[in-house]
Length: 120
Image 1 (cartoon, helix red, strand yellow):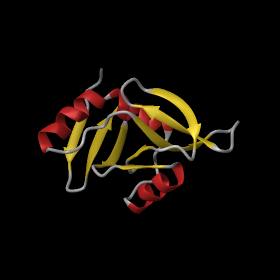
Image 2 (cartoon, helix red, strand yellow):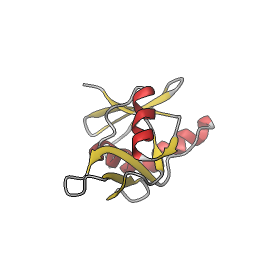
Image 3 (cartoon, rainbow, N blue to C red):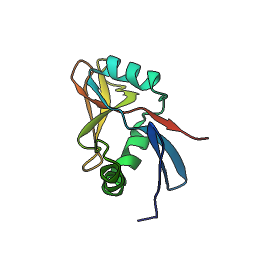
Image 4 (cartoon, rainbow, N blue to C red):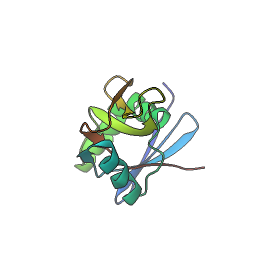
């Protein structure tokens, strides 16, 4: 696996890997899709795509080692993405970070969210 660069900031960390550079909040929200996307927006997010969450999932072990050393909450479980299902309008995609699995879930269900922003 390619080297990953983790850079700690005050309220977030930067993940650099596979030609991508993402800022991910330490803060986490649990809620339905609408409240989760609002949380992400308020915390500098907007790039909570399936692709970005799968990259975070791929490097979860290395990221969590860094987060643990900082005393921050680990990334574990299911996370909302900003992508809605094209087949079922009441659903959005979630990523299981433990395996990189992608599923769609009813937008009224509660899952975790963290703000993700991509550097251009």
